[in-house]
Image (cartoon, rainbow, N blue to C red):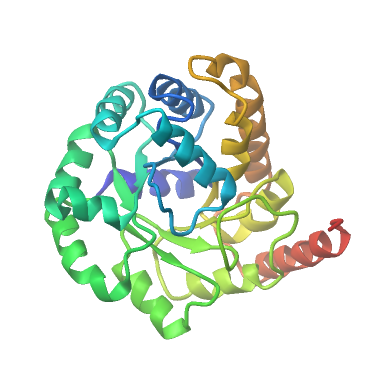
Length: 294
């Protein structure tokens, strides 16, 4: 059993859902990233997602793109990130999942990239621009290392293709909540809950929902049908005004925000999502959509 599978099994046994924060490696600096990861693990985030800065991100919105640019402008590179991850994973039990462009993986070499990630203590990877047609060769290398390769399903993914992707995913399945790029949103699509409920009927994998989740209300809406809620832009935005070496200035605000999401997830957690859970979550989605100012 991989560490990711173990964590989700433990959460299910406890009737809890995972709030999974995303942070950019090296924004505002690698020392701050390490401190932030440790603090997030310390307040109860069971899984952490770490973005590897890339100059041409595929699915990331302006907030995360800007964080990548800040990190790259400060000279942050992959060979500096791995030692930081190694030090952090020695001190925390929460697994770290890497979010990385396939261009970086190709540049390093697929096998070498997975070996470097494992040596650093990472417990899985998300490669958003890895096409299903290119997946078999990359997944074969990941399987050699027993390194989970998390796949993404979007609202526009045809259902037969979504089933294929779910079968290929390892660790968990990442459901993209909205069509488009990452970023905070005031409302989420009403059909999101039904889409995730259908996907759950097609796979035994844990399902984590990401893109656009930015408030306790979103978490309460989605927790009944999700195993995990991934939050990125709403966290990264709170780091924009933070200079290198000044993480302590914004850390209380970031941790307070994430605690509010954890509390919201715990308030709506359950051992599973039945029809009544799905219907109730759909009603809440409609209510949020109708009552949120645009």
